[in-house]
Figure 1 (cartoon, rainbow, N blue to C red):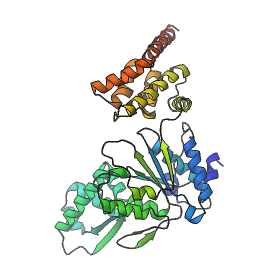
Figure 2: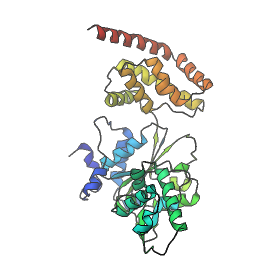
Figure 3: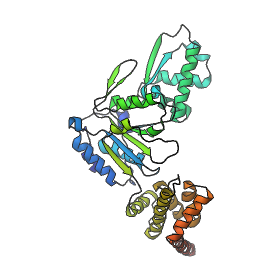
Figure 4: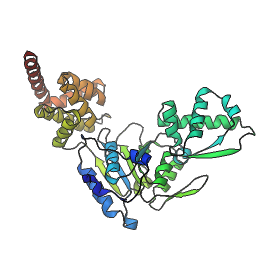
Length: 373
């Protein structure tokens, strides 16, 4: 038994082969965080406690703070298939529920545009396991938002050119419905961007512990194993405060910030394979100061773990630590000259530019000695 199998919520549940593939496999580089352990213990402890059950989680923090990684890790911990939906501003109820699609004749199908033919054939041939969005994303190679828009355009086109040969309608569930009905762990990314109040109401209703979703074909109940993990950024352009009714349906929340410096370094070593602790220590200090300075000065960008990993990896491959600081970290936060100056002043005041210069000298010495061997 893997050490995280102790948190399996339904150990006797038999998953299909396809569902087993959806259960996230933790890479060797994954480090279990305090947040992960805390959530696992809380959910396991309350799983069979009726109204005290915890099945809706909120992970709120800056971009790059590890929210999606944590959501996927919970899939492995709980032994549940992982899937996700990325919310967008113009979502409507069909994106929450799914779509009814007419099955048209092959003659009429041949008169349609090649892309539309491809999409409809893929939908007709699907086994109902995938959502409409997922099918379109795979067939057309587009984003979830583009897939939803394409689906609406296709439905409008069919409706406008309606003929008498439509004898059958088929319902294609959304990714949310699929996870809800089959008992998966669903990551709901950025519901804060949704504009339509009716869409939020539908989502709120679905997240009730004893909730149900009214489909055009039937009413479905929430599967007892269904877990919703809402992930949302703080202070992110285009977002609004999380809907109060949605927040009220959450039973456990984690505030996702940068971890401690020690954990940052440990994760960077694991992720990149770079093991120079002295260099990583300076790089981590710089990330922490930049993150704090950006917050204090209301600079929208973020100095997070992703920036730290890519910067450390560039340095490990021989890039200039000082030069790559701008391309991997600072310019990712902002390219505004005044804001960059604020960030540079913060680093200077902490003596971190001098520390970075020392790192550069040491790295050049090591590179020189390596070449001489």
